[in-house]
Length: 424
Ligand code: AMP
Ligand code: GLY
Image 1 (cartoon, rainbow, N blue to C red):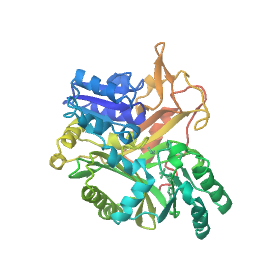
Image 2: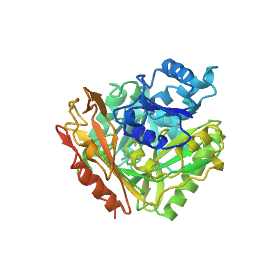
Image 3: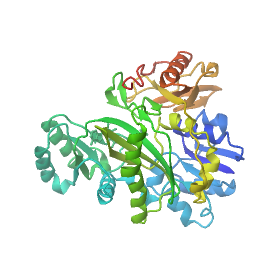
């Protein structure tokens, strides 16, 4: 099997690391990849949005499976592009077509989907620049905090949660009248605030059957105690201790099964990962959002816990025979702690040399934002290294990640010292 993974973050390094362990693998390519993926595969200098270039590469190199890491190429229709071209239509793309990708690409689409299929989620209404005044009136009927979501993709920044009415009104006006998030905020969903604790579940589906992957919880804020600006994710743990069997049964019955069935009823052929962001309110699960890909840094804790051969699993997804696979999951805990560039998630410098990676023995340093320069590994993004570790317990896994982080350094390196702080 020849496999191409699209993307350049910690998620793609974790997927590459796992795929590279398969005896079924012949060649692994990653586009564009990073200094970590270069260790387990061959980096290809192609942008994830260059469909023509990717398709040509795949035919020239006899790629069998393309695994799409980030959401943008999915929302832009890479799977449709492959299916519509004679020379690429037999290549399996792991990731939904444009229609299914709308579950992430449009908040309004996903809210309507949940409503149609009676999947528990926060109550909502959607507004456009033409209905701004109704939106402002609607805010007056709600109690704080207010949840405002730009409809389209806004690189993880499109959700704003003001705590007072004045702020909420001015945010709504900024988003709708002044295009705060560009085209993404031409429509805004206002929804009820859900008060609870968050976690994520991940599904892999071939469109007919599905496998539930390990649960994970990520830590999105830059500061200790979950304070400060939102980031892509500062760390993650798997499994999630409060997601016990009874709770997960509710998730499967009320959310996962109706989501898969809903896609079928709506004639949306969905192949790939479905990431369901959940809020546990009391003992009941509600959907906060769908993503049509794996999470980052959740992948860096979920994928290491999968004992099955991932290439075999991807092959079964492509052949629509996922029901024949017995997905094996490790009982161990895996945690990851993200080392980031000083200043992130605001402005930060790049090209800082990373020292000590070769001394790590008790953890897996997944590269999130790195590149090679003059024979050295240097920083190339806000999130730099996701230090993942296995442990018999969450505590043991976290201790290993923190011990390993003391062995690496780069100028202005920062990480949170409290990942997992709110659990048990
Ligand atoms: P999203 O981009 O939809 O994941 O939203 C970003 C973050 O906003 C989520 O991770 C939650 O922490 C928070 N959030 C989104 N929707 C709600 C809601 N209805 N109630 C409470 N918090 C929310
Ligand atoms: N860690 C959240 C995400 O990947 O969207």
